[in-house]
Length: 427
Image 1 (cartoon, rainbow, N blue to C red):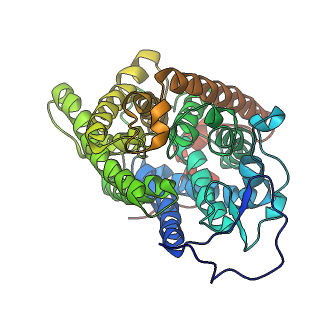
Image 2 (tube, helix red, strand yellow; image 1 turned 120 degrees about the vertical axis):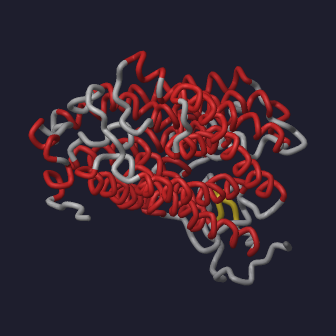
Image 3 (cartoon, one colour; image 1 turned 90 degrees about the vertical axis):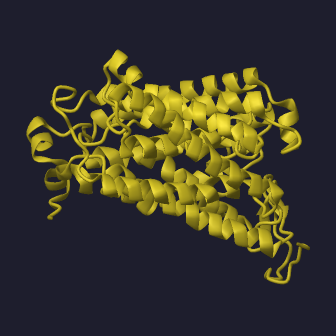
């Protein structure tokens, strides 16, 4: 589609920030990213909320839904105030800006109807802000799966705010905002490291620091409504087409292959999880199939725009197998309570996908794949894992000595719906 500026407000030329370009509006590309923004928001509300909500016990379902809503509310406000600026406010390629953005775009200062993010001059910057905001929203919401059924809501609010600013924003800048990982050739098409490894590692730290749920693993803590979880997983699958396909930033062949790779990897991920589960349990489960589907989605995320569909078949399959063992054998071996397998799926799947991106990146799909390297991918993971784990632990200590982290035993027995929100689900 030919670029046009017919819909741009005619004003005096804006003063561009270092990351910006003058807008060369393309309405076709813009339309696709508007749709993708809606799809990624759908992943959190109601997708992830239902996916997680169905897996907890009935007395805690509303608390899990509340965490997804709260993540959307808190992150959206912080993103406009300072989160976007810290992530994308300057093209960081020297000094401190290799590691963090700036305050230049505080409250979106300098973002106008005529500006675009420098790497996507065909898109209005306001749309870039919105699209990236949806990624920032879902990332801390994913972490909640690791400590479901035992964290105070006040602690969750403080944790989400601090984590967004001090963990998500820096890592987003490192990879996508012009920071040192992206500039050194680490490939992450749609958030394998930024979203999934980051949230998975943070979730593991949270699970260890908060400790196990009362009665775990002696008591069987059955999901209260797997129909909710199935609906949530289906919404995640549909939303993921905007998550990965939209990360092409254009409506073109690259977006098309990313969409196809996403669907293919999800299906082979379900196979990769179901086969070992069937062997171990003698029966395939609905929860296993949809968990594998999500595992395949996680694994393909960093690779979606760098590999061909043949590779996506294998990436999804290996991601499903790895996440099955990450959510079962790994958890049993180290005896931590990752309630809804935030680390087992997002951490393990993200790591597998990031490494396999280095293996299968194809320059005929994306020229950036020509210099793909497993070593670069591994070093990038080391940086992300180290920062996420360290700062997450510090934030948890801040919460522990201010709001407190965990509900007391009586509240946990009664359930978080009643004790944290004064509500109960009936029927």
